[in-house]
Image (cartoon, rainbow, N blue to C red; front, side):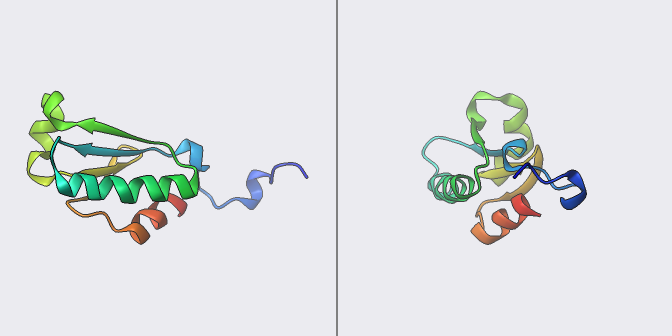
Length: 95
């Protein structure tokens, strides 16, 4: 059967491969490691790509997020910081 037409998709909903999760972290951060575990699991389950950026290598990220790391962005918008809730991230990626 062919792909469903856009008529049957929720308006504004994007396919998983069109989403992007970004983890902004720093080396030696245990909260960052915990966040990465959640992100890896949720993104693998949903087929969503993800990336990580080192806050110590990007002055702009450092200035904006230093006191909040780890920070998670979904499609470039801040989703959360410090602790990542698996259910909340999953909802953000499927709604």
